[in-house]
Image 1 (cartoon, rainbow, N blue to C red):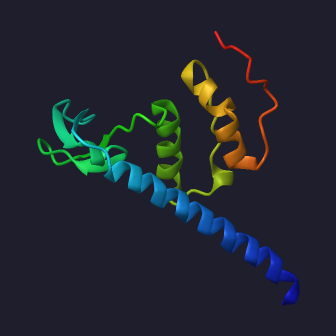
Image 2: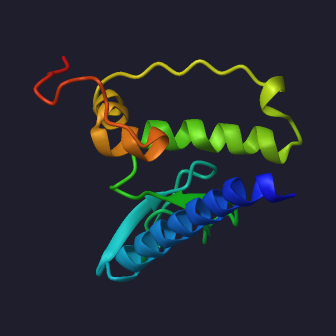
Length: 135
């Protein structure tokens, strides 16, 4: 159907942009050097990982549970919200089955109100002036 061509092209272009962004993040991660210590939420033990593993999920060498190797470029609170939503989705729930309220404070507020994050979501700048300070 010819009327679907332009929306399909736009969707493909958006997908290409997302893939490019993921590849750029992977490149940045791969270039990290040194090690990072990550704690397992299941057994509580810490382990060392190559810095290039930051932002990935690994298998705990102590208890074999999955554990997250934190990425300093990702807000931990927002990552937890995303993980919760992903768990709901992997359990087969639809977005309409889930009601989630997220309260932003501290660094998370600054993160979600930054023009870069806002623009990623809506191709627009945030209405909050850059000079705004948050307590």
